[in-house]
Length: 231
Image 1 (cartoon, rainbow, N blue to C red):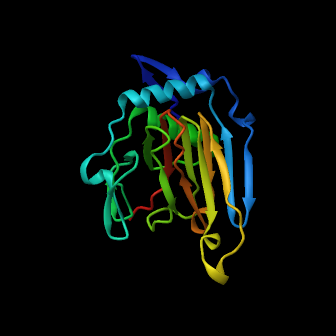
Image 2: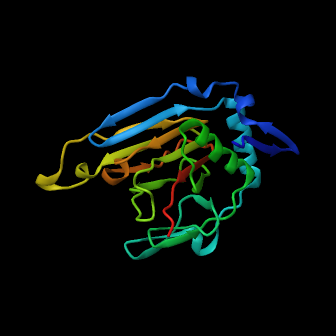
Image 3: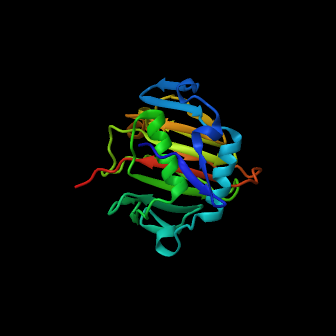
């Protein structure tokens, strides 16, 4: 049975009823070019998105200490954002020299996982939650191509809060000299209550980032659901 309930102020809400939408009728935008394969849609009403955002703001505790740092070219830096991970029992995720443990699923995040199952028929076993306090918090160009990720499964990214630009750049456009190709970047504005699916082979070919936007003052919470290979 698909669970679509989460508690707020001791009352259980049904996500599908609050949104008042038919998931079959969601208008998906597909972007396909040069091995880029994306699906994007606003999948929840402003009311439910804001309710979820407030619940996450009130309840999520983010990593501190070594788990709030990242290794880049051998040097350790503090993450320019807040981060925590949730998932099934025993799962860990290693990226940029840092291994993060999956904490037990909190109810609102679990409800979102089940909602994605309803939308796309994919059951994820891990999620990274990133909080950007304002437009100065960011994430640099990178690819989510770690070996423990299921390369055949899309990464599903849910955005709540401040709308932010999401920029993708082809790996050959980042090269120099004669190997560089004139492939323009792709920019998507990730709206409050939206979901972006990065389908294969996107993460093998395209780098993505959430660049600094100094004029943006509002916080944003992003949940990237992934399928981790076990064993």
